[in-house]
Length: 351
Image 1 (cartoon, rainbow, N blue to C red):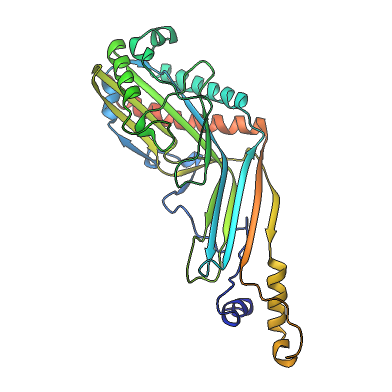
Image 2 (spheres, one colour):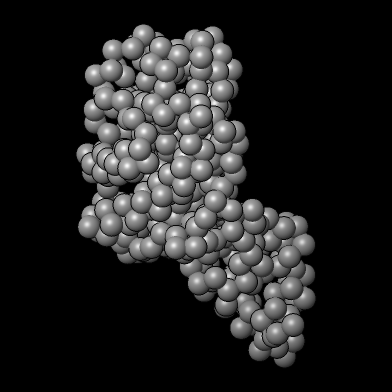
């Protein structure tokens, strides 16, 4: 135990812990241990959970009525130690992106998906045929843009579709959905579309975050707390997925999914800038200096500085986007994910 730790934990009885370093890592432990970090060039199907891929072999005809593209617009993390006597908190916002830009990116990603689908030899249905179907008429689009802060999640996500496509969600796509898991209207409409057009219906979803956050969590006994932010673009687990459906009758059908399970590092698309900081580090250091100097013993009549009972450090950041870098990074992510999806499609040829 070093001198500073001794001062805070022993002399103050554990009231204040080492604050740790915001945005430098330090002692931070992963806050989301289930999310492995994988580089985009190392991403494979091992990073996905796959269900019912055999559905892809039902027919060679494919309809894509929607493509969802999302960006995390706000993220944050907090940590505490010593039963709440040490607190750190970090919030970060994505700036420089608007709805028009997001829809353009959604269009480019969707176009890549369709081009790759056609290259597999499958028949991709045209928009006039899709939109004229009875099943399509029964779909209930989600308001576009769709903004959602999932329950018990620090992230706020904005989701759009290409300008000419509806934004569609179904219940099982929670938590990034505006529908209850028990709301089956869109699922039934998709089944009706599949049965009427004798096709597979596909709805991909690509969502990226601008920061990977980690922290020491909330502890009763530890004397310190810290959080860390790693800027960049990252594919978001669970929110990034590929859904496909097939039905012979409108009332019921089959569905399969590829769901991203690990966080994928895509690259940089801007610059992280600290925009604010509020802390009492100076007050803590004044007290620690007083304790280390032994003045409390050698000069008992000296007026001592106020003893802080809470250590806090609150910081705000912005990830300021470079539009060109963002476009390149999004398309790199789209091509990589779509390439994996096409591999699964090719591995399940129509019977």
